[in-house]
Image (cartoon, rainbow, N blue to C red; front, side):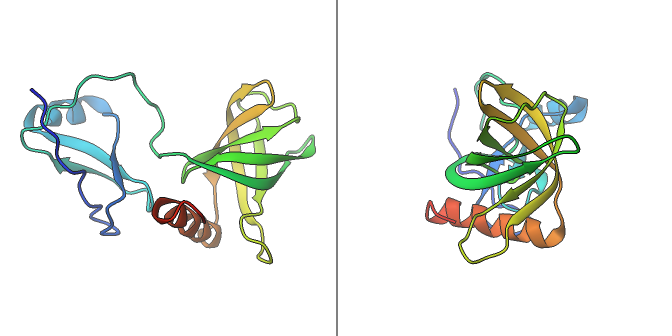
Length: 167
């Protein structure tokens, strides 16, 4: 029997944006026998174990994403050592995004990504993003290198999406 319990509060930022993560390694699998489950804060990216006494999570298909995606529509510029192009970000999270673009982008390619999130504000720049998936005209990117200022701005954007549905 599975009981429901509210997801824990993030011990780092003290906000209620934690989501259960998949278990990694033997230690986390063993800990789940004692109701200790891994969680990741969707806002500050902190990963932690939390006691969920009496809760047994049903097996489900493995979701490799650590962060929830939010539907958005932001103009974007992509640049690699070989090419420059434009696109539209359709889904955004603290760990990556999905971009509609006509650029050829094979999995493993590295791009610099510039997003226009707010009008009359500097672009949010991801210095390095790796292509994790590519379908017809959609590219899935994982953020690899994001400077502190831009990470704070992305955090602010995701916070707005979590609370209000707008950045």
